[in-house]
Image (cartoon, rainbow, N blue to C red):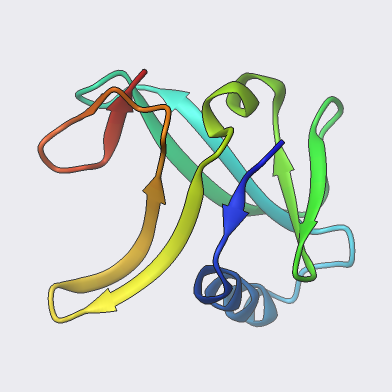
Length: 109
């Protein structure tokens, strides 16, 4: 699976995890869930351990968990963390998306 997380995004997740005092098995779960204006939306959360059936991979020392359903929608996606005068947060660049809603929080394929 090709999923890219930029150094900025990895750094932000690692900072958060350091403040949460999570165990060695912990990692970042990245999911695609049904919902939003365009059909699907992204979800990211820290989890203590992977679940059965997860694909687990390492991105610069960050463990990443992806479930089988989400895998098909995350192929080729790049996740970045941006900070600007308008705010800061994670962005998803998905080459498979055929559309997105006006607010940018959901996508269609």
